Length: 98
Image (cartoon, rainbow, N blue to C red; front, side):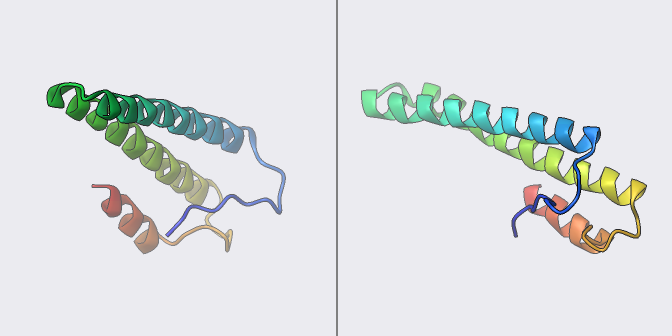
């Protein structure tokens, strides 16, 4: 399941800030993944490679949690919006990251 960005309405300041934070985390993870690939290509110590992989994994997890957190906030402020995921769907998404 993928997160969808609603492009039919004007984004709120909160939405724009949440999107900025998610993109920053994803870009950080992208850079860390590049470092992991380089480390493997160089034949670096396995400890260093695993530490870098852990950092990538954490950055991706945090981006996912930010997406879910933003969806929860949106559900709380706009409970009648038909585009919002229902509580069961949010729970399933949250647990998929755990």
